[in-house]
Length: 204
Ligand code: ATP
Image 1 (cartoon, rainbow, N blue to C red):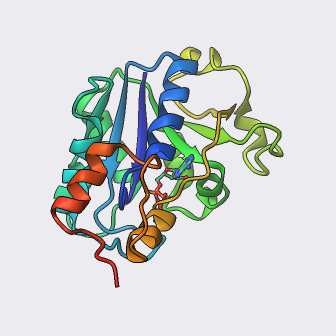
Image 2: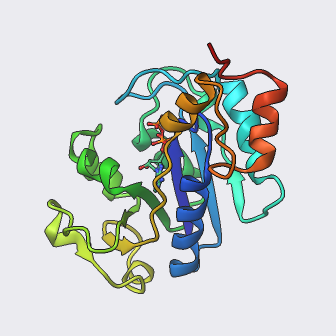
């Protein structure tokens, strides 16, 4: 089973990395694919270019073989639709089971994505919940709390998984940098070092 975490990663931070590792350990995933978006359909454009965000991703995970940076959305023109990404992954890895990792905020908007039912035909969803958070409000019929269930069918389940949440967002990190303050300990040192060296997110 492969976990897929899509995002703008503007920049990548410990909120992404730690929760992805939590999920990996709960489910025994063989790999986590970080898939940076080129042109997000649901939000404003990232601050940094694709090449800059990619360089930060490499600084964050190149020393950990569990993480794999997948650039297919950066190489594709047009909006970055998850369905297209999963279709191309399925063509490459026909026997693989894919688990799409979503924060509860992302899951709450999932029904508005491009062809959500088709996405569920190709992957399981893993909703990374805060402990004590209410049940996902949609997709009751597909809902499970049993990680083992994901091994028994190829796609189509929604696993609600309580994971340790870190109150870290890329927005907050960008704000700190803009105000000349340090975001240290919210993201890997190697990422911060590269941000400083290349003068990304300048202050002032
Ligand atoms: P921004 O603040 O710019 O909106 P972000 O920090 O939310 O960015 P994204 O790249 O948009 O980061 O997030 C990609 C995915 O990671 C989304 O599914 C999001 O829910 C999840 N995510 C982001 N931050 C956290 C966090 N602290 N804990 C758990 N999941 C997170």
